[in-house]
Image (tube, rainbow, N blue to C red; front, top):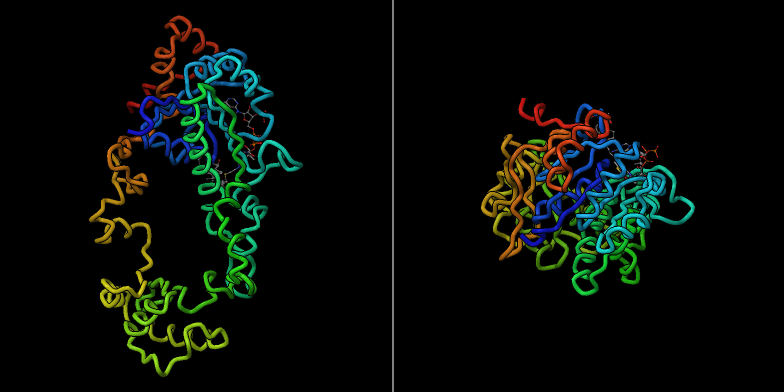
Length: 382
Ligand SMILES: C[C@H](CCC[C@@H](C)[C@H]1CC[C@H]2[C@@H]3[C@H](O)C[C@@H]4C[C@H](O)CC[C@]4(C)[C@H]3C[C@H](O)[C@]12C)C(=O)SCCNC(=O)CCNC(=O)[C@H](O)C(C)(C)COP(=O)(O)OP(=O)(O)OC[C@H]1O[C@@H](n2cnc3c(N)ncnc32)[C@H](O)[C@@H]1OP(=O)(O)O
């Protein structure tokens, strides 16, 4: 796998850093998640392929353990508020001095500088600060966040993984590590570069929800079907729009022009009425195999069984029968080989990882009895 041999220490966080760690793990990195001690269960729903070490970083001995882990690793990924790692004595100054090849990835909302750097926040705040949230929402409605996809995952976890891979690539030339300041505000904004750079094309001149790609245009929207499901329509280009009209059984000559903005309400009413006359399956049969750019809106538990996704194996089932997306993209020679066994129990790998990193059994015993680490191999076997 592409990242085989790369060792990553991921400090347990909420959502973006776990996603970053899972991407690295899917593509072959060895990812050790450092959990807190005395927690009943992991909050990491993206733990595929990771190992867990339970370590109390509030104790100087715990800090020393983490330093030793980082000394023999390629990447450390930290998801805390600015200053938390420095307060623990684990800032980049300390860790890079000991291991100059270390890539120190800091995944935060607001970045390591600026007046908001130390403020708490979540996806919706970062998305708001990126400028993009102002564009998301339906006509005459308030802005709404599309789940926590854009800042946490696209602009956060994924962008940070990209930064780590870039730094690994660069290290091959320089032999040196570096610090990655991954701000979710900036990551989200960067993902949205098209929105800034396409303004001169007039794509976003109208209020929110009234532009071509924000559900303003009737040919770029969703429609309810007779069984209460939905179809997605993305028929932008005239040749594809013609096929939409044909599939809907409408007469193009009796309709307003596709791009006539003043006629959008009428066109939308027509499409709404027509889509409501057949079930989702019936519309899918009509549009499958055409270039009308019309597809069913699939719920998560149907996406994997759609013939196209099934043929490509786009979703996988793990040992517990849970279905989730397979890693993307697909590399021809070194594709990801995601781990299918169950997620780690907190502290399940503490002993084995510490032994591997050179801690002798007496030292591990002493750390255990001092409550600096927790070993939960037994719990994992239950
Ligand atoms: C929208 C998303 C967030 C969605 C998350 C939800 C999925 C989950 C949120 C609540 C969860 C539920 C809840 O916890 C209750 C149940 C618990 C149960 O176990 C599971 C079920 C639950 C129902 C559970 C279910 C779900 O998991 C939830 C619903 C986001 O936007 S995520 C993005 C957030 N932003 C960032 O990540 C940006 C960077 N980070 C930050 O800005 C801050 O970390 C943040 C997120 C604002 C949190 O601030 P906080 O004050 O809490 O932490 P920090 O200032 O960063 O400091 C961390 C302190 O922890 C110490 N520490 C860390 N590791 C260790 C260790 N191993 N040992 C000891 N101590 C440790 C560290 O030293 C810091 O201590 P100090 O404060 O003293 O400096």
